[in-house]
Length: 207
Image: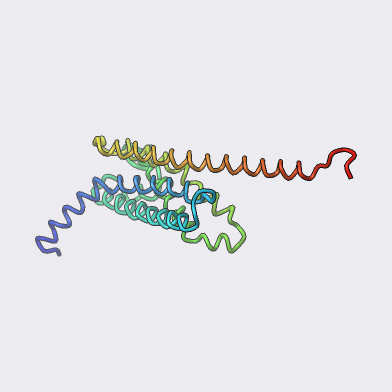
């Protein structure tokens, strides 16, 4: 159905999809989580910076899910996994545990992306806590996806391992920033409450 140049283009695209789309999905997912961790800061970031980071968060999340779909498609076409393995975890004929981790993390990625799209519905129904709870699952899903990427397929090349190490560092930096901001916010709140309480107390015998 394709011309000769079309077949050549499809061949190289398929090779690229088979070898690299899984890496792109994991790297984009890691960036999404890292940006998501720091994009809610209100003490350091301005409104414009938060909006820019949240846009980046959504964009990299979309890239991650798109790369995931192509990654799964290429593996099914190559018969590395069956169609059922793309939907039901721990059914693969080989490497069942690690491929199952990939299936679970893929479904969670799609669920979290859906909650991001439908965020207004959760907030409009006075259930932001439900949105935050579902969205927070991504923090548990990320190490599962990382284990899948490192060990489920063929031995990774050096540059792939380096990219995964960088992903870990990015997420740890984002987590450190988030924890630092949260601790500072609590200290500021405690000091404010302490000052207010002291101001409200009067010495004995004063009018």
